Length: 249
Image 1 (cartoon, rainbow, N blue to C red):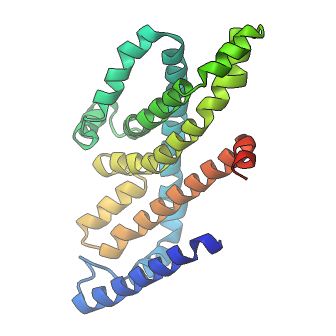
Image 2: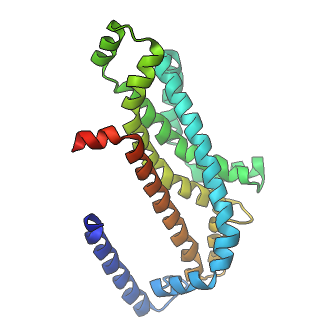
Image 3: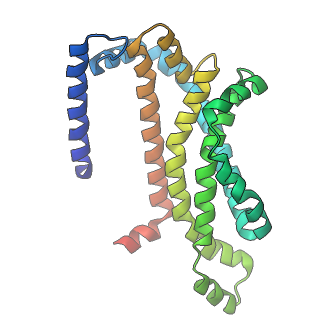
């Protein structure tokens, strides 16, 4: 915690400036104070946490899970077959130039207001960092070690699990650290553009009512979800990569 004291102090300074500035402007529908947002969170806690939060968490969990499975599968396939790398890698890069916000309404037309229109947006946003990072991790495998294992009689399966997977793990977790916060953004964007429930939907509804604190309240919860998921990824990274922590010491 001592490493983050400076960050906490900086955040407190920013919140203080925000509080003073918002009180001076005195237009809560444009810029509510942090204390207004906290009070609104308390007032709406049951609606936000019991009704809208579970729906947003479902979108994040399903979208992120599908992205992880598809991303790892495609990264392994591209690592094993050069033809697949040549076929899919340029498409992956190109997909990042597509404005997701512009496509999201189309997904609403395709899937309606069901959960799947939001899940698709989340998958498209998170799929790229997981796939490319994992694939780059496989490509970083030390070929001298690979040749050494081959000369010692190791088969492809043993080389894959004993050398290539450990080489890819650091990059995979780096990709996850990017994908996890983006999954929260993807779910919120999907709910903003077409939903009947969820934190993103609630924020948009408050915008229509010119309730500034009501707009920020679900955003605060979304930010906390992103930080919590990031912390889970860091925790899992330490568990699955104890050897790296040992090397750093």
